[in-house]
Image 1 (tube, rainbow, N blue to C red):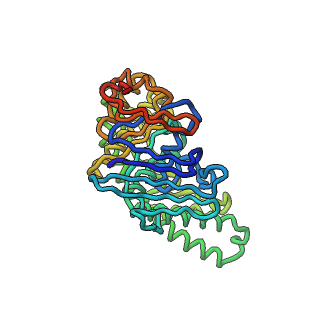
Image 2 (image 1 turned 90 degrees about the vertical axis):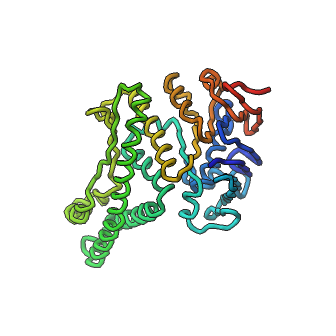
Image 3 (image 1 turned 135 degrees about the horizontal axis):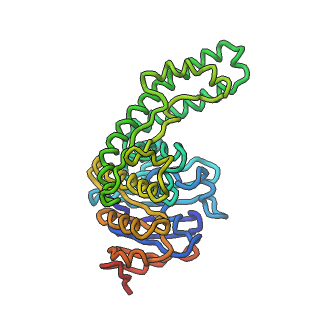
Length: 373
């Protein structure tokens, strides 16, 4: 699959923008704060419904405008799929697939598959478990509607349970305690499904990432990933009951898959605690490559890869390894210059220069990353 075209109206710093993209490597280059990342954000929102930068749609609408529109044409098996996004200042966003409005986000997820890679992802190993859970949840939500349903349901129940735990009346009102029992049942129901699917995903990803990491390190390192459960499916119900007194004291739910983590080891060493910065970043690259391969296996197609100023954060060897792995899928890259692509002799399909919200198509990169006149 690949994005054929993208149209923006009153999105971030773009009053109007029409882009035609190619199947291979598409590069948007220019100085910082010119609008390169906004283009990736618009495409990402069309494919996932959410921004990778903000939770507030009104921040995305161009200053002075009432709303913003994005239209994306996605090619799947050479059949076009149109996705429309309408952002409003005071109302919920609207979305449509092939001009038919959709009511639930689940209808959109899976239409297209995207892997988004930012400099922050390079720190996924050293950052806290929230980022690693997000890595798991983002991927599974694109591929598994059952997982998405259970995850969203779990998060809603968790929010209601925590709200009830904060209610000062709960210590004296039996009806509120009975309500807490109901939330516990629902939390276990959805939480156990989340745990099962996550564990299966991580096990499969572990099989993929091993060879990828071995190649990235020229056979010097052996990586493994495992799912670190806060509580097992079987013990979840009893643990909730056992922890209730503590939960009432801290006014928060202390056990469940919202506390899970992804363990990454090189041999017997836990990279989260003892890995060098270089080891952590190589492991992060391995995870991203494994994510791409996992999607390929599940959908029998290639996902769209978006790289937001990632190359500037990598040394030359890791840049080379990354660029070697993007040859067979559509890749949309933002960067400040073209030197890395020329030095690594990367075949560029299209180059765009971005300057103060103006995008100029320079042309076909041709062989060896050489820019056409």
